[in-house]
Amino acid sequence: MKRLLVVALLLLTAVVPARAQDSLAAIKQKGVLTVGVKNDYRPWGFLDPSGKIVGLEIDLASEVADRLGVKLEMIPVTAANRMEFLRQGRIDLIIATLGDTADRRKVIGMVEPNYYAGATNVLALKSSRLKSWTDLKDRKVCAVQGAYYNRRVSQLYGPKMVVFPAVPDALNALSAGNCVAFLFDNTLIVSTLTSGDPKWAGYEMPLVSEDPQLWAIGIRLEDVDGPFGKFMTQISTEWLKTGHIIALERKWGIAPSPYLLEQQKKLSTP
Amino acid sequence: MTARPLAVLLPPRPEPTAPRLLAQTWLLAALVLALCAGTAWAQAVAQQTGRPGALAIMLRWAPLITSGFLLNVMVSVLAMALGTLLGLPLGLSLIARTRPLRLLGWGMTQFFRNVPWLVLLFYIMFLLPFELHLGGLVLPVPAWFKAVIGLALPVSANVAEIVRGGMQSIPEPQWSAADSLAFTRWQTISRIILPQALRRMLPPWMNLYAILTMATTLISVIGIQDGLTLTRAAIAAESRPELMVPMYIFLLLLFFAYCYPIARLTLALERRVQVRI
Image (cartoon, rainbow over all chains, first blue to last red; front, side, top):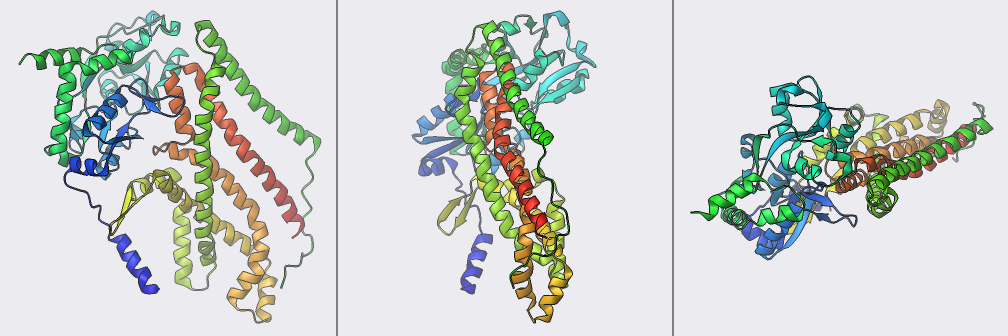
């Protein structure tokens, strides 16, 4: 009995994460594609009341699964844990508003061409008369935790950043007058302004959008040059070329992104 | 052998007086009122803008948020069970006569009692693999299970202190009497001291459970779909900032409804234990 216990313990400690070299084959063998997605970022990935995750990025994820002929499993991730989950092998893909930065490229692989690009702007009351980014100096600016543009803006323009865990909290603070502007992604600001909600009637996007930031689908570093990376590149190219993501933007009420139009033009004229 | 009640040393806690009962009623009323007021306000805002009412939206999301809350309850129950299972021997080690054992128990207790729960959770989350390979067998390790382990560790250290305190609160003559009757150390602990101490350990143990239950919302930070995560996701999905207050109050009331009876029961038990000293 004791010997059995020792053997069991040895087995437990000697566990080596036996990951197949080729993720594509592994996914097909499992029959499941596991994707890390957002569930609190409307309209990219959010919950419906039945608990199902829906949104633009969810459409993309299910398309990848369909092409592979496997089932889709979605795991809600946050900015803090998504890269770790990918490295651990808990998820196979990140499609979760992931900004493509040099720092992150050291840790995970980014699928090229990038499927989306945003830029930074602010949502503010028309009456606060913001003219340029430098007007933000020493004034309170609401922002969302973990957004890539927070650091750059606070270093360049020196606003007093008030950071919230999620978008609704920050919007709430803005409409309560706790800050002069809300620092956010420009396409989502446009969507908010054009949503027809009278609450935002007195608001505008006053500045010139800055710092275009590419978004990427994240894969493990060792997959970048493997079959899985090639497969994802092929899908991503196709999405951009056929205007698939532009159509999805329309479906989910997102303002058209100049990046997508430009890419489509570039890819369809060889 | 059985624990005879000793002389009453402390006066019994007075029964709740009318003002206290009144205060409790007020507290409850204030909470419910806050929910109603928040909902009514959101409803008013909704009516101005001619969109579905806040009440309808709350009702739509209530089942999902409640299911998330039930996950919190499940995690709390499992973490408490595991923590108690580990904490009992740990507490006994604190009064062990062998010095190395005592030191080991002391070290573990101090460590797990004095590190932030959230940091421990993060640690366990990333330390444990998401699946175990045992030979050809692949055992998945779900995130909630990791959360249970992460919370059980600090719980076990706190239980250990409760066990130690409870046993040391038993008057010294009980030990010497057992000694003079030639009970072994183990017999003394298991048959004389523990049975008496258990009754005194129960109230602080339940207190710890109530605290643990409220602390389970920490697991939302490590990406588990608990009540808090789902409430946030619901708020994000509606993109209606005015719903934030009523939604959070709804979740708060769920926790309150669960924890408040435990607190009441703890007080009642404390009163009984005190009389029986």
